[in-house]
Image (cartoon, rainbow, N blue to C red; front, side, top):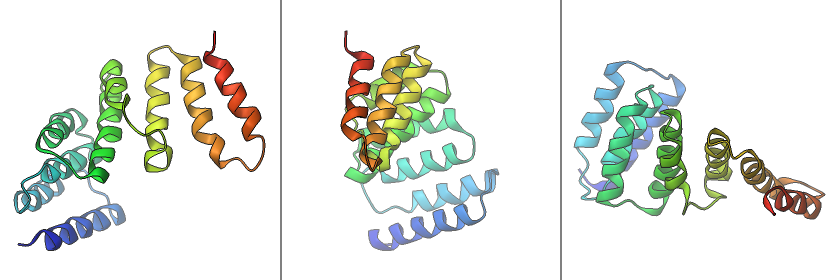
Length: 161
């Protein structure tokens, strides 16, 4: 199988999953079989396997697969998604410091601000409420039709000593 065909099959899998989500073992097996057919030598198969586990409530199982994907190497889109999704998983598992570490180098605007949303939640879990609010406000500011400058100043003042 060529990589383009595999990518098309992965996309079709996720389209079908989103249309009719399932959390059973069969759907995980289906994705695992598809991942095993990947002709790529990078970490994309690990990433896809991690995603289905996250999507079906198997969060603890997803983290090690995200890590394997990072080790094997990922394209820029999957790398960004891995950072956001792995941080979210770590946070859900109560590993706040690990979540913050994963997000340390993430683009705050990545995935429409998803990186900032997870970052703010992890900071809140760490008891760093002012930092969390600052991150959330800074993610929102580009979308405001007015008051961007004022909100940027208010956000900055939350963490300025």
